[in-house]
Image (cartoon, rainbow, N blue to C red):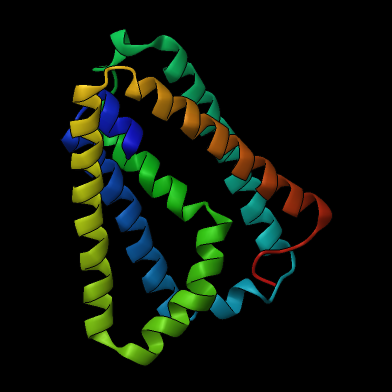
Length: 176
């Protein structure tokens, strides 16, 4: 979201955030439908999610590094729907997200009812708007911010991607 805001503007950033939010809605729906129980039945499921999520994060890290190296001249490139899809895919393939929804998220929502659901997702939407606007405003005042954000995203995505692959390699499931 920050990279989209710094490079392309508020709308592409908000679309990336909405993609991630859509992923959380899907996760909430799946977990409240009983998928959480199925995640712990087969030991290979958390490892498979970790491999897919880690590989995708490394792919996104490579893209963020390429974007940072391209510099500000490439700022308008890319289709905003791509940010939406990236946000959606990132959430749906993140074992950390699966683990949160299968544990804390499911527990939080099961005890607090529909008002918690609307408040939670309303808060996420407010955060998407605030963060997209703040990052865009900052990037307009500091032209190199887009590169800094892209480099930072590349480092963080690579770290988490390698961490997920390490979890898969040693067989420690995040959901187990």
